[in-house]
Length: 288
Image (cartoon, rainbow, N blue to C red; front, side):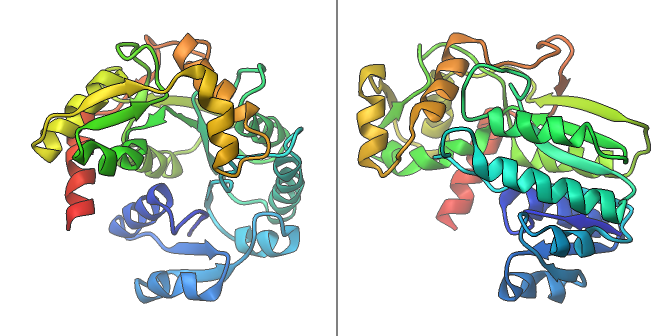
């Protein structure tokens, strides 16, 4: 049996379905019972647990061969990432008490970077997981290709407003389906200690290539417009953010190149899904 957190999201749901397709038993960890109904109908065992509840997570992890671990996204963390610290304490307790066979943690490109940025939360979780008494794999995924979902409506009108700059600067990207397939693969393997798997697509892509892929999928011309760096803080605060600096510095890191894989592009694992294929599937899904 494999316990899957984040099962209602894009990656977690694909991990669960991949495991079920292999004939494995899945324990769906959800934050409320109604969120588990779909998975119960598919034959999953459902546990209600929040990632900050050590007792509930202990029971959710107990008796499983593996755990696919995701932590809740927080795009506007308080200084010092207190929610991440709180969650880490609960997760460590749960793992120490339940002793699952292994843990595969969905981490991120740049988790090793110490410069303040939004991805520090994954680095903090990695640091905690290095201390637990079970085998752990950090699946460091590149920028999600499906982040372009936020741009589809704008692209329909012919323009995408880009934080990624310069527009021809290429960064590591990966499709969520490839992340899930890699996680399923890791959950079926055995190892000791800590593994790091850094995953990106078959090549790197720029904001211009995102716009071109959206244009192809939507069958309409799409151009990029850069959002001036000087306007980011005011823009994010107008959207309700209280502490936008970590998010700003994350985008800076991609744009300036200091957020990248620890092992470098030459060593990272290359998945097969292209940006154009991922965005074509994304647009088709939105239109269905």
